[in-house]
Length: 262
Length: 262
Image (cartoon, rainbow over all chains, first blue to last red; front, side, top):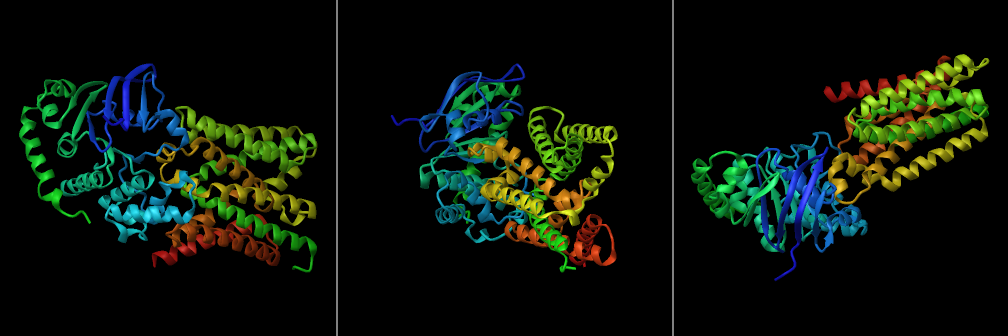
């Protein structure tokens, strides 16, 4: 069996004396797409920040690409990260290419190599023609692709997405996840995506991890969706959502997924 | 007017001050640090007054005080719940009050303190001109060495941290460079108006330029132009140099605003 890209083992995180995450364990295999779901305030973003090495652990350990997450953060971690974001300021004085290049700045590999990698990442994200456009004047969907290209420019092994489709309409959301799936297949990328949108992630991820401070369930989306543990995590009934989820899966793997996002 | 050696020195100092303030002003405007600039410049009064009282070169004392306040703002502003603007309010009122109290306790030092409150570029001697030049080069070197990392912080601090950039140190460095720039600018326009040079040329440039390279270049050019034109105008009309420089810069801003809206 291949070494996991991410190994989260018994992780707890405390904030102001209270545990916000408790005994979370899961692994992400190379090339796998893992969705982290849970209700608002469940600790999803904290879990991502722990994987990025940005928050101290109260217990347990996290290994990313064979090194502890905290070591990796101080060294420039080799992870591609798309943080939660609503929009760039309209007057931010940089073009899409400049923003993508910043994702590789920590490598200090020279400007021409950095520029080449950024242009390649923009092309992979299907927005090569936006390279010289001011980033603040792009649409929400285009801006999201710029941040995805920046993450691809930073790493081609592991992509971490925090609520990547917040603020996008349904077609844009489906196109975004279809693009991520295509990049995952082309590059062998491992992906961890966090979303409060259970429907969107269930259609895109191969595995779901459901947390609400503790880990409630971990498995294939179809198993997670119908599990009692999911109802427990969200403290509500999910039967009425089962049909919606099936419908959404059909959309995600159907026409929208096949559409060329470029 | 350039037949006089003191005017040659004043013009050289004004141009250098305009360039340095214009360059740093780019980040002051981009990162919304205008109030930090006000805080540091007013805090420097405490150091200047202390220098006058103790017989230490006032700009050296003001610089040390300004840097200490900048580091205090960087540290406390980041690590407590009050927020940076509140911390600045505490530091700047405390340091300014100290300066005024020391001035009132001093023997005949008030007149000297006024020279620093309102600037006195015509009194710059050859040695001081060299000192200002060295300080300007230090600021320029610090900014050049970290420019794109600082741009990354302006873009997204959390992302910069995730990619291993030393966010706290970069933030503190920018504030220290700001404090040194305040010390440089005080000689021309004084503590009370140095903010005009830190904000107005960069704000004017932001009205015209959408890319950071153009905006930085324009901010530097406008800073130098306002300083040189203000000095010449003050000489011709027998006005206070600092106030005239600030008025020229502000007039340029409103003229640009009108032109951009028409």
